[in-house]
Amino acid sequence: MGFFEIFKKRKAADTEASRREYLNRAGRITDGTIIDSEETDSGEVVFYVYSVHGADYESSEILCAEKLLSPLKYAPGAKVGVRYDPKHHGNSMLV
Image 1 (cartoon, rainbow, N blue to C red):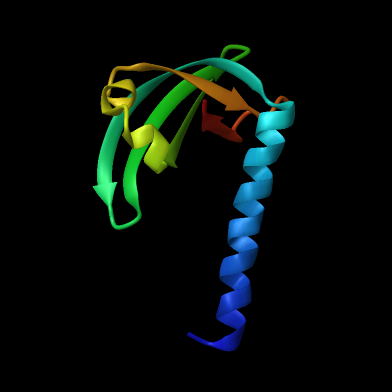
Image 2: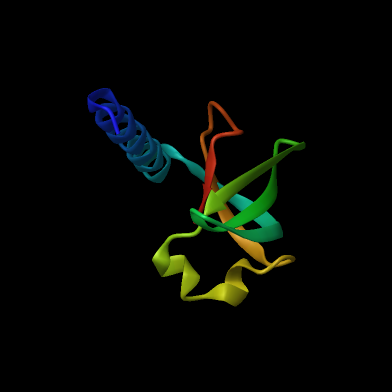
């Protein structure tokens, strides 16, 4: 790993943390549905859909350790809460 690679990874992690912090602070909540899940090298990934003002959005999220404790809550077909950015509806995360 090169010297600059360290900063790229740190910046990406900081960007994700700030995105999630913004959504927690200013995001709106709607209902969503888990449509699929798969195991990857990064962990368990769930794919979900939600609607905002009649438009459908699809996204995915790698489940954190806390969410992995409730596997049935994130099984395909399960209803979930989705927090989305009111200005950019495609920016979302699971509640």
